[in-house]
Image (cartoon, rainbow, N blue to C red; front, side):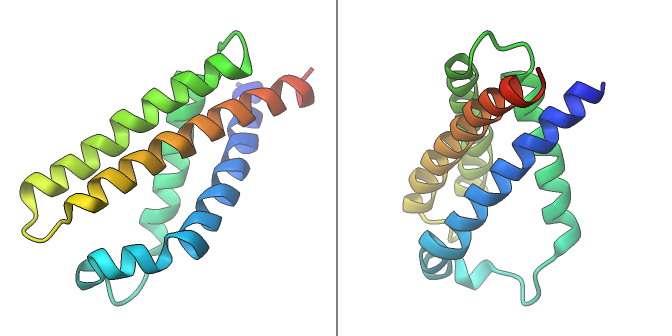
Length: 131
């Protein structure tokens, strides 16, 4: 259990660094332009933290934990990210009046790349740091 938690911590740090760089820099104006009308007036920290905790646990459990190599973890991470982000974005596109189609493609691509990166880097760093 300790090894899982340490692997989760390593992967969570990687996830946080990469995702915050994306949200805070690269994609900030994109999201505001496309779905600014849907954004809450005040950021809700608790649901955001819970997402990071649960999502990274999923990446570690399904992609990193037991992977034979960092690249196998990255491939599993890409698939995990694709399916998770596709579920979110396609559901939003199907049910929300003004969810942009461009958002669907960009967000699914981002989830795929992010999850692959986190799984691959998390597996690599864990294999080095936890030996």
